[in-house]
Length: 202
Image (cartoon, rainbow, N blue to C red; front, top):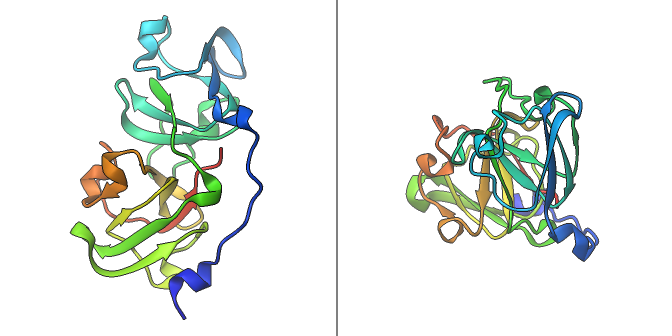
């Protein structure tokens, strides 16, 4: 029985068009206190807007990628529609707790209903492969620890089962949607260990 059959595909209704216009509201203090800023486009550095880091935020629409350092560097945080009253709400990593988020940007290619992910056993698209179209909370349970992938849509890969540990955002509009090596997953990628994967929610 193939991996694609085991995972299946979940048909979801298309979100309203308004959700595709990204909006993120941030505060420089926890629990939505302090100086407030609204963004609809990339923020390369919070210091350019007069505050050192995001301490709470609300995602009004779209999906966003937050980063530990300025210039979209460091640990990644996938922020989907909802409220994040303090840093623990977005930095739930068992591997590395981060109390700051100094840059962020919309995730432009998230398309939950049409996302596909091709996994490969080894880097450079070598070895056994399998296609996924649904979330998977435990790749080891299916006998998989992928080394490379290609895709349409946007996916969040997590270091441990249950969507825990380091997060790696994989996007189809980043280098043709192909990730041949672990180092292409992000500036914080130290290991190819990925044990759970899910689609980004718009």
